[in-house]
Each structure stands twice: as structure tokens, then as C-alpha cells.
Length: 150
Image 1 (cartoon, helix red, strand yellow):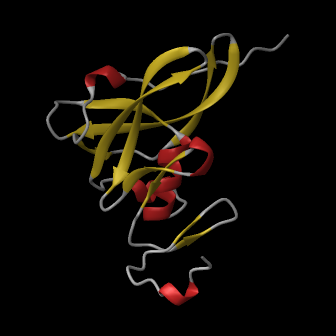
Image 2: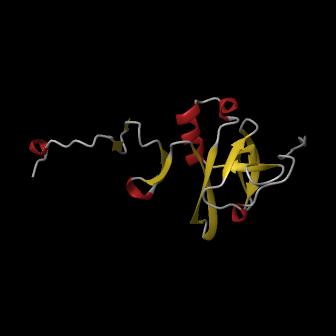
Image 3: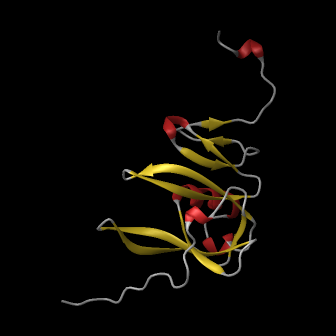
């Protein structure tokens, strides 16, 4: 049987309980997928190095898919392009696998955390017009009352 050496992210990990809404941070490395095990099941987590405005040092952070989608929207698909932009920390309590945890979101400048249909959360730029099969968002303050069907 052949075994392959596995290496995780080196360095200190930031704990979500140590973060508060409104903190400022910047990614200082590209984001890379890393294999890990959670409750005995293999999974992939997206890990980057992050620096916080009010803390010394650089920390590892696992970046969730909601944040990844926002970073792609703001800076493009290559995670090397996400480095050194100012991000705002937003935390939210959630139940994951029966356990209450603090979820950390990284919001690019001008983006907001919002609820979508069916209970999903998204990070969106409210100045952009988005059209998808699940939902659509139009930023237009003018409403033509003649076009309302009731």
C-alpha cells in the first residue's frame, strides 16, 4: 500500500469566536483547496492567509462558498487577484451538522450580506443588477404603477 504525505496549512488559524462584525482584513495569499477530514468524512476546504487591521501576524482562514462567490464577483475567478483588497468581516451564528457555530464571511468593499429565497445567504453588491434562475435583483427606485398587475 502506498501512502502519500499530507500537509495542511502551516501557521496559526484564526478562531471565528475571536472575530467581530466590522473588523477589517486583507487576504495576503491566494486561496487554495486543501483536503481535510471533518467528523471522519473527507472534505475540501478553501484556505488562505489573512491579516487583520488590529492584530499582529498572519493567520490561516477557511473561506466558505458564499464568500468565494462574492470574491469572484468583485475581483474575478483567479484567487491571486483577491490579494490585498480591503474586506469587512461579518459573522453569523448558524447550526451546521447539529452544532451551533459562528460563520465568518469576508465582504468586499461595497458588498452586503443578504438573505435570498429559500433561506440561502448571499454576499451581493447592491449597485449591480443580477439575473439568475433562482432570483433576480433590480436596483431601480422608479416603479411604474400601471405595470403592477393588481
